[in-house]
Amino acid sequence: MNKIIVVTGPTGIGKTKLSIALAKHFNGEIINADSMQVYKELNIGTAKIKEPEKEGIKHHLISIRGIEESYNVYEYQKEGRKIIDKIIKSGKTPIVVGGTGLYIKALLYDYQFKEEIKQSDYSELTNEELLSKVKMVNPDVNIDFHNRKRLVRLLNKYENNIIENNNKNKLLYDAIFIGLTTDRKTLYERINNRVDEMIKLGLLEEVKELYNKKVRNRVIETAIGYKELYQYFDGAINLEDSIDLIKKNSRHYAKRQYTWFKHQMKLKWFWVDFNNFDNTKQEVMNYLEKVIK
Image 1 (tube, rainbow, N blue to C red):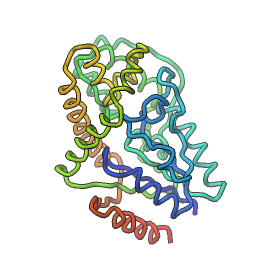
Image 2 (image 1 turned 180 degrees about the vertical axis):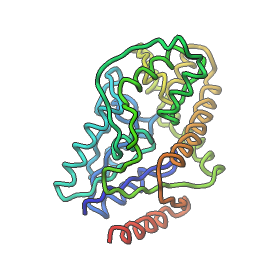
Image 3 (image 1 turned 30 degrees about the vertical axis):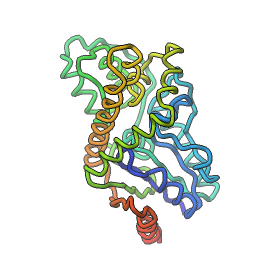
């Protein structure tokens, strides 16, 4: 089959677990679509899949850059499309998995990029106007509008890369889009519990190692679970407040993800049965079997 399967949804919903089952069933290879999981040093805080959990399934675009190396959606698009072609030629099924909506759209839709560099200070725009322009490109972005320096840097990045065109909703591949969902209360409880589990697994130690190496860049400023603990290590807030902030920002991120999916993608939604995840796996597989036929 030459179809591409996309598995997406908010953080903490079970995308990784489902993707392994689908890859085994449909003879697939997995392409990561989480913008933070591309970095080698970000593991616990990004809920990156561990080697034993892969169950022998080949994964692409995970841990491909060091934390201080540059990486952007344009590079992701180029590398991801080459991988898709390679997987299809090998007779296998590409399965794109992750919650970074912009990466998924740039990979599969007619997003065009340019490489010429143009820098502007946008002095004629207010911070609110800068934020509005940034969110027109990426509603998924998490940034404080008071941080003008970062807003300017991000807008320059987007405008240097993305060419506005009328074909951004034109799908270039034969893809099936699966979305996983649940009610807000359940999702928020899962997010809170997952943050507590990350702390138990050693998130503090993972972040402290980066902090001690004096890593301070766009990635750290963006990555939930890392930027909040940096505030703790800086002495700006206590540990309890830092953990609460990770939970809060993760919940807000999930809400923004839903907004993106609603306006940018046509997904077939499946309600997750957390008491028996096998039910969800089977429901999705039955749907895919029908669509593929």
